Length: 291
Image (tube, rainbow, N blue to C red; front, top):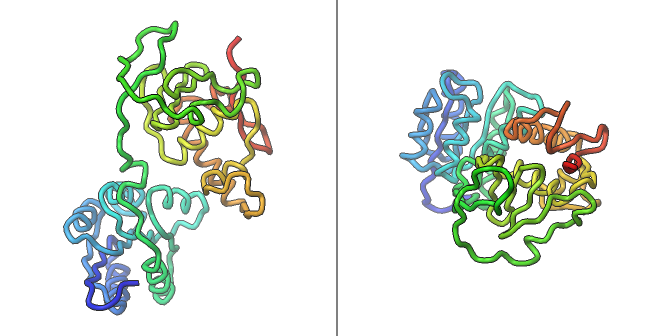
């Protein structure tokens, strides 16, 4: 929590005038100087201009919605983001958090609860700028080793990654992705470089979120060994294989959402997958390698 005479600024992005006025009152009573905007585009500019400690953000707004607004804000600001919405499905909550929000409150909300949530956030360290996928720095371009397939991008010189990073967790005989040069792993034409956090499909670099990349990397290293939804949920939380930690149904639903988004970006369907196979009721694994 801030102390002393430190200036506290809050930006309110809300298209409903009554709720916008309520938020201004609550935050003013909490000691914030409040800047209010009625749409996402103006809200992003307000965050850029006033550098607020806290930003409240409505999800359903005209123009760009709250999810896109959060991504744009998170690209340059470490402001605490609280999403306010009438949507209460778990998938909406997960999408909000994946967009860069720090907390998610459904409408109608109690002003006392909002204030308590904000004060609790202020006691936590602020996340560094650019922690969301939208703000992630682009790694230097590098191409996988030459394949029989046509057209490989030029190879840029790079230092040799550490041995423990580039070695597959599972041998090729078990169906894991094949290890290439400079830290690359390949499976059926899909290339991934874990230390550089690059994914290429047929020579085209894909833009993945942090969660999507980590899930794909885990499957590429595990090959035909099944990774359960609980296992993958723990992996995203940095608690891989720590079975004492609780994994809720919402956590597992979150893995399904991330995996669905990953498949869309790869251009494959769950019914006839090229790379990621669903093991019904259990989890996921790589498809069998080409003969």
